[in-house]
Length: 160
Image 1 (cartoon, helix red, strand yellow):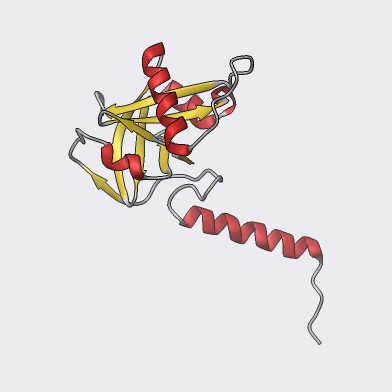
Image 2: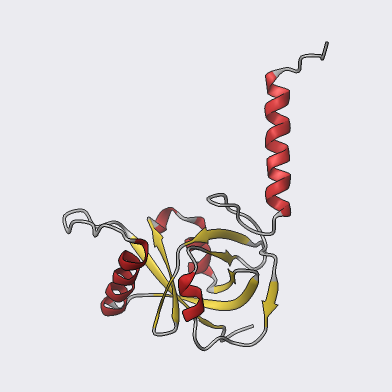
């Protein structure tokens, strides 16, 4: 007969095992934030991000000194890469980008070192929102209750 383990011990073991697995996977795991992204760093700047537009999600790493990464949607318009955030004031990764715009993006197994620019131009914001609605087949929210959104465009870094 096998000994019975207390439920708390089993739960603790599962949580610790899952935490170790998450740390070992080199980035976020679905909706769970991760640390430093793993993959091949691409040194050359990318002029046209259209290839990333076919990806369902990408990983975004922020806070270079203590990496924090998330999985998120993306869209490309005219070769530019954009990433949205719903309820941005509640997201750690958005706060980190607002403090330090240096970021790393993983598309597939390749990592790109970029700079995030938060959009403020209404025409650009509308174009990105329209592209997201089309790509992810979203329902457009009513004007009476628009969601709080932020959009970031990713460009080559101007600072190391």
